Amino acid sequence: MKQIVIGTAGHIDHGKTALVKALTGIDCDRLKEEKERGITIELGFAHYRFGDDLLAGIVDVPGHERFVKHMVAGAWGIDMVLFVVAADESIMPQTREHLDICELLGVKRGIVAITKKDLVESEILELVQEEIRDLVKGSFLEGAPVVPVSSMTGENIDLLKEHIKRVADEIQERSRAGIFRLPVDRVFTIRGFGTIVTGTCISGQIRLGDEVEIYPTARRARVRNIQAYHEDADGAAAGQRVALNLQGVEKQEIERGTLVGRPESLLLTSRIDATFRYLKLPFKAIRNGSILRFHVATTQVEARLVLLDRKSIEPGDEVFLQFIFMEPAVVLPGDRYILRGSYSVQTLGGGIILDILPKKHAIKTGDLARTFSMLREGSIADRAEYHITKGTYEGMRRETLAVLLGTEENAIGAQITELARSEKAVPIGRTLVHSNYFSDYKVRLHEILREFHARNPLKVGISKEELRTRLPRVEPQIFQVALEDLLKTDQLELEKDKVFLKGVARTADKSVGQQEEQILKKLQRSGLTPPTVTELSADMNIKEGSLRDMLGKLAHENRIAKIKGDMYFHAGVIEELKKKVVDHLQKHKEMVPSDFKNMTGVSRKYMIPLLEYFDETRLTIRTGDKRVLRA
Ligand SMILES: Nc1nc2c(ncn2[C@@H]2O[C@H](COP(=O)(O)OP(=O)(O)OP(=O)(O)O)[C@@H](O)[C@H]2O)c(=O)[nH]1
Ligand SMILES: [Mg+2]
Image (tube, rainbow, N blue to C red; front, side, top):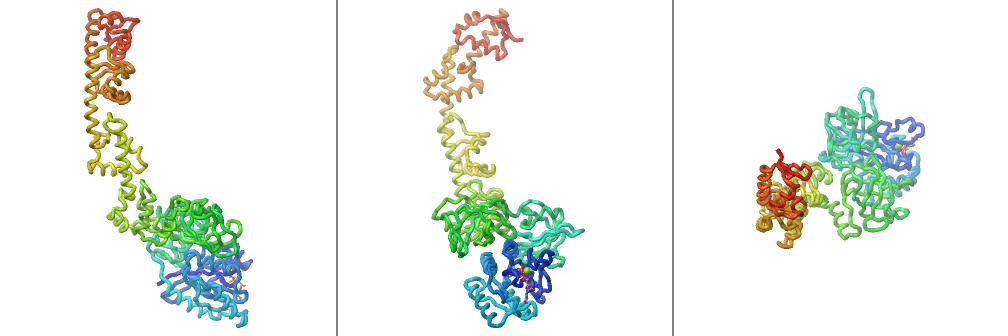
């Protein structure tokens, strides 16, 4: 059976609730306050079966100007509007406002019901019909059936039903594919059952026992029972009014405006790109930076306008812009929204959300319009490429990409394969990196190495970790794949933990080896009166820094000995000296500095450091000015 959702609309007291009752027998005004005041405050819900082939859920909205936000919540996600104008009052402010809202929300079909037919003469009725025709000209209701009825006498109610059926037949049932979303419009508890939420399922489907997440609070719950139009069901899908009995969550933890979805299937966002149409009304210009009320589904949030190509928007303008939300909201691209004044209760306009994770756009770029048009009308592949590009070097995870495209991950598998095949994106694990960024990353990696070798001709290479931290931040896996790519194409070499450029590294290695040999020779020749690092540097024409690197390495390899600070001796020289000292101490048991001087002939400059070196290396022990052998 086909299922659709119909919403009422129209000025206060024009007979919306009475009409729903005449059509369905259901009274939507149930609150005590509604009964007392004779007006609708909260959304009301009814349904009607048209034989065996159509089931219509009906959302009855309030007409009072103070409750327009409820009207927006109710009208969001409807397939068709029952647009009500009372014959005795004709067009009134909320008649226009509700029409604007339906238009902005993208409602495509509807029927105009002129209620209270019994209260007016036929000439008046004709006048009202005329006025309505003028009003709806150019809107989605132009050419829609206009049916005068009386909910009091029941006149033409059957005729209206026929029209509803006919229009409903032309409506395409909503697809069950896509992300399951149920914006909550009511929460209550039933003794023995726990928490129940109701809403219009706007996309996807849900089954009994499924786990759900309450957005934006991230609470988890399980679907214990599903009712659609007061009948138990195994599942529910887009286009239905649904009541979910949730297990594991308290009533206080959910409120109108929250959203029931599948765990981790949606994103919270604080900034969006969108189109905006400012209604052609006698209002002031809206300035950049204004904070206004942003209504989407059953939720509303304060939002700051960021104009991208102008300083203000005049009534009648249609622009691309950004909104910054004061609190995060859960929306999807393609969602329609309504913008209302923050203090004065006026509907200013609305538009379509295009990007829920936008970048900060450069002001006045010529590409802006093209980018936004692509986001609005482009192919999935083009939009996917755009979103992946936004991820720069870090790329974009598949599941995030799916949400940015307003769909589920399994629905974009083919597009991802195609992007990879055409080499526009590189899949790495669960992430997609745009190939421009991935290539650039590898170029940068290469450049860092080149620079490193130029600056440190004597070092073999750079450690993997240091290389990674010098590159733009990415997941370790992306770095690893980039490295492997360059290794595979023979541009790099990896030795233990050290990465180095292939050609450069070898020559560096060779010259380093030669220079090391020279150092060793010089130190050996100078015996117990070695040159200082500065002297050696000048002598060999090697920068001091590089020379220190090499000396450090040679000392580490025990080919030279670092005696103190800048004083290095050849290892063989020290070894011989050591033998002499041991010899002396074995014969004489002790040694004073003058013994050492007589034995070696070194000056004081070298003597003290050498004696201390032998103490430090635990060959000797010092007592007063004497040294003895360590046991
Ligand atoms: N004579 C007559 N009275 C009607 C008709 N339809 C509604 N009324 C009366 O008009 C008043 C308002 O009707 P409602 O159905 O509550 O109006 P509403 O549009 O739902 O009002 P809000 O929800 O507050 O915007 C009630 O007293 C109804 O009895 C009609 O066809 N003929
Ligand atoms: Mg009402």
